[in-house]
Amino acid sequence: MLNRQQFPVAPQGAAPYSFQGAAPVYPAATYQAASAHTPPAAFPSAQIPIGGPIPGPTAPAAAAATPVFEESYIENILRLNLGKTATVYMTFENNNQWNAKVFKGRLEAAGRDHIILSDLTTGMRYLLLMVNLDYVTFDEELNYEYPGHPTAGR
Image (cartoon, rainbow, N blue to C red):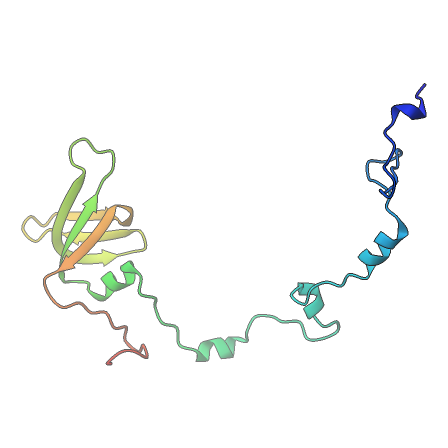
C-alpha cells in the first residue's frame, strides 16, 4: 500500500499535481487565457470563407489563350541547335580506364537525360547521359531564342 508521503509535494504557488493521469492539473485562470487565444491571420482555415466559391483549376479556354514557352534548360537549348557540330565534355566517376572524355560530332537529338551525337569522321553514334555532362562547346553561334517567345528578336 502506498503512503502519501512517498509522493513529492508541490511547492507553494505551483500547479497542483494529479496522480490519476500523466498531465498536470492547472488552475482555471490558465484555461481561460488559453481559450482567449485566436489563431494567427496566416492560419489557412481563418482565410477560407464558408459558403463562398470553391477555388478550382482554371478553365480550359483561359489556359489555351495563354501561350506556353519552353524554359531554358540544357536539353531545350541543345534542341534549338540540332544539326550543329558540338564538343561534349563528360566526366565518368569511378572509371579506371578514363575519368574524363571528350566527344565531338553533330548534335542529333537531346532529351531530358541524354544527348545523341554522331561522330563526323567515323559515323559512330553516341548516346551520352546528361548526368555525366560537364559542358558543351560549339564552333558557331548558338540559337537561344525560342520562336514566338516575347524576348525573341530583341
